[in-house]
Image 1 (cartoon, helix red, strand yellow):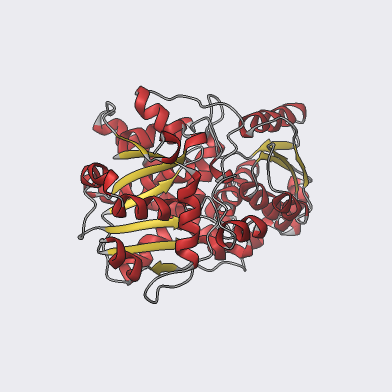
Image 2: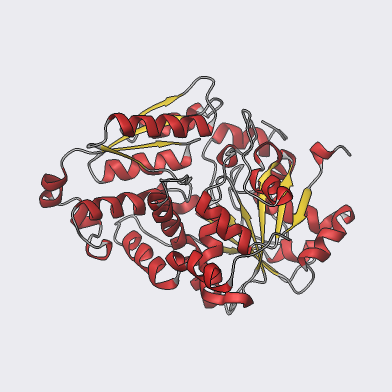
Length: 409
């Protein structure tokens, strides 16, 4: 088997920050801060916590104790988790402009005539493969503001149409990857400094506040998962597998769990596609690295080559392992969830949402990875938490993979 078709992995042996520095890293993701995010999201009339699905049949089949999967296809009717980050960051930005605390700015206040008159017309600009941009466009629409969205080469036309349907100005850019689109968004803001702001989940030097707010927004999903687990009699998972694009989701979930459970937290593994594996490459090098190219992976939502600077520090300090995988494992994960075993609930999971399921299945059933199983302490006592971050956000791709056997971009 060529390396292109294999899992590549690295256990985290990078030097860690001091205990006080590590604690400071995750302070903005502690229980109190994420509670503010969750309270804000609860103020939307569309809010409902997404399901935490028990996959007991799959767990029995592959030899672990439990598998719990957070199904984000139900989030706000948008079929993906991304809206959590963009909406919270946009609200915090507007609250800051008004000199208010986000705790005093729920949805009904933000759309009030009084607030609209004070803020005026504002444009939120972003780069996206689809889900994040749709969340920004939807929130701007809900808040009666404007959105501009740049999409990289190879983005789905269906996802573009979904963004345009929210009233945004959106376009798929020719010969531009995700990171180039981020720079286009930044240029737009620089040209319109008084009436626009970049809402991006990747951080770079000088642009870290809004990405941190987006990570706090993602924390709502993690807090819901913790509450659902406790309602099911599970204090905490032993293992979490987290997909990484720029790393904001992975760092947000990991940060909250670390803030709550400290050194007794779950074993966390970061999962990426081979064609956009900047965290895996960084782990090999022992320092933050950038991956270039078109990154035309099936997992379009993970096609990011520059680790979020804030997210990188959290992931470097708290993750146990890094996995780089072929697109085939994402496709396998989609099919496993669509055709479950032994009475498990059907989960309609998209390309970026299903990859962790495919990876866990492969690690547990392929003896080529028995050393990885041992290194991660995955066995019959393991309680595994996964996040299906999107549903069939492009129904044609979903059909091609699940019905027709497509395995790659």
